[in-house]
Image 1: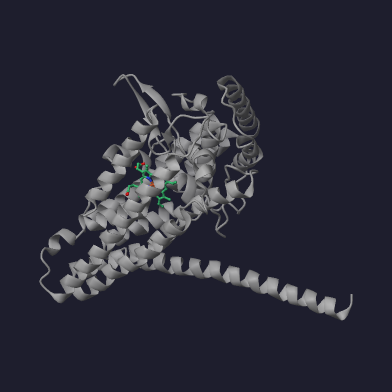
Image 2 (image 1 turned 135 degrees about the vertical axis):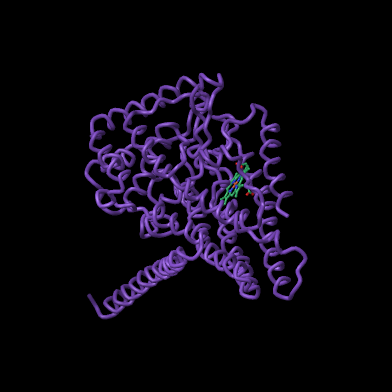
Amino acid sequence: MDTPAVLLLLLFSVLLLTHYVKSLLDLRGKHVKTIQLTQAIEAMADDHEVAASFSNLFTIDGAGSWPPEAGHADSWPQALQPYREIYFSLAPLLSSGEPSVDDEVNQKRIDSFRQKYKSLLRDKVDLPQVQRLLNAAADGRWDVIPRHIYNAFYCCIASSRHAYRWAIIPVVKVAQLEKTVTLPDELEQPWTGLQKHFGCESPGGNITSNLLTNFDQAGNYVYRINAERDEAIRSAEETFARIFRGVETVGVAIYHEMILAIVSFERNKRSACARHVMAVADQLRLALKTYYDNMHNQKIPISVWMRYIQGFYAWNAGYYDEQSEQWAIFDALSGNQVLLFQVLDAFLGLKPYLKPLDQETTIPARQRAVCSAIAQHSFRASLGKPASEADLAIKKGFDSILRQLRVFRSAHRGRSMKYVTAPAPERLPMMAGKSLLGFVMADSLAYLDQFMLNRLNETV
Ligand code: HEM
């Protein structure tokens, strides 16, 4: 090789190495800050019940951090291994080609996908062995299955269940009309134990099971829905998932300031309290930026979201309850489960957005405990008419949080409507978090819009 070529090669290698080291540092930098903040919260656990409730959430559900750690890239106990292999081998069939609008054709494709899933599970999974591992975890034996692996397995089972439930992406009408879906024991039995551990029984999972835990510890997105589709679809899917992870990552800084604000207020340190409430408002700007910068047509095309992303995260199935003589139909993922927004509502003293039954079935118990601890210590109402400079500053902080939330709720209302009206000829109107909607599109939209409008009006 001549000298210029060698120099060029050297220069190229140095550039590549610098880029690699920089990206590692960025990633670590972010991670280190989050770890420091979670540790700072944990250090306050003995002093205040709000800090204790967060600490409990981070330790148990988060495997020592937040958003939750999930050991997807680590080696798993042998018995769990087949689950991820099966998902990765079958996911490419899930979203392959345009679905038909012919019910019979689709039914055949669904049956064939489920048949393949069922036989692979039957052949490869040793269910009693899996159950032994999960029982060990239930007995607190986290040396047998470490928490971060448990979280990764939670996501694996949740993703596998949704793959089995829908069988075709974009989801199709015949699958939507199934009121009951019998899942194989290999996907039912572990799920029951996992949901018991997390404290929410919905068969369709939630933002934690399918999105927050769907990143390995280096930040890679793991269980793809559209594994082999074109880049626009793959990137939209990943960007969507990253919004939830991103919001919760900034969330940790908000939770930290919120605890400090509560503690300062209760110790009558009003100036310190004002600084912390204002810091919540400042950090919230960053959290919402994750949403504003990504939740738009350029990054997540409106034509892609409804068909290739949203349907997978729905559930819309359940069972007939003999006692009440009614169908119990379950929803699945919705932005309304994002911890940050529930925590902010509690901090402001607003009533929860979700009804108690929806909270119990879809929100993990330790996230609910965090919200109720904050609600009990919410002090905005006790401020009354500000009597001092410091109280005025606290009020200003709260007003800034409220203003930002109102802007978010109003923007979200507008953006969502654009997404939910995208054509999807192979299916009926359905939201992941609001199940099958009316058969008339205009009625469905009005129904969804009302939830958002009500919440906007309540944000005062
Ligand atoms: C195209 C994507 C999205 C659409 C179409 C959409 C649509 C909706 C709809 C229709 C509702 C009201 C019904 C319900 O409670 O389920 C809702 C609620 C909500 N969504 Fe989204 N959403 C999307 C993405 C997101 C994202 C990325 C976030 C935040 C990270 C989010 C956060 C929320 C919150 C917090 C609520 C509860 C109401 C509130 O607190 O304002 N959504 N969404």
